[in-house]
Length: 264
Image (cartoon, rainbow, N blue to C red; front, side):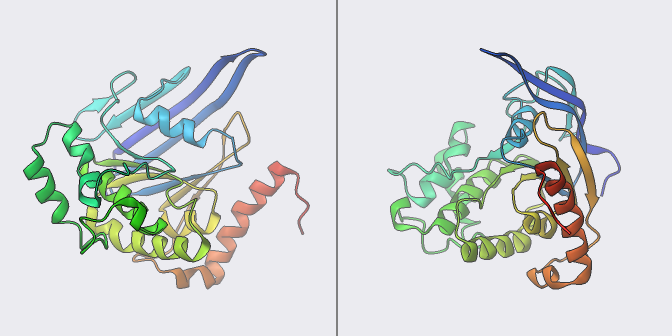
């Protein structure tokens, strides 16, 4: 991996004006993501994890601190990041009147890619994303897991070197979620991307990530940085190992301490 980060957040803070005064959401958040890494953010509900992604994407600017994004040999700082990353939100947001193929190419169409070329690019990846034979199906005919695959294909086809994933499997049932995690593990090395994943699931964060940033309650601060030493390629069987259990316990201890949960 390259030594220089693709993404560097330094002492980022974010506050909003509210009817009751200033609402501080982020406070002194620093993190780094290097090329080829998948890094996770985990923390209490409402702590500001999605706000971090919005700041990275350029949808919002930090109140203070800095964001540097180096994706193509150049560095984009504050005010210059919009359109430089691919962003997959919590909901699949598939258009019901478009087929799988039509939804997959939507981002490319917005970028001005010709429809014929866009479809060729999508069709070349349908099998990789487990969608072979479903190109002409509509979203209402797909399972939740299949819809997420389409949304992820659309995100990857945007062809941005940094991918932001906001609870991509959060709405799925436990079994489908486990299947999607295994699928993403198999896929990630092949797509050649760098990513930031927001999740509430400690096991998901450890299984999928090179590094986990544990955030505090709002205003979010980085409470713990966990390097995940598990070898690659990963598999769900690793969740049964002593090493995995120790990593999970260290993160849960921080989260429980914040929540005031009694634990042994």
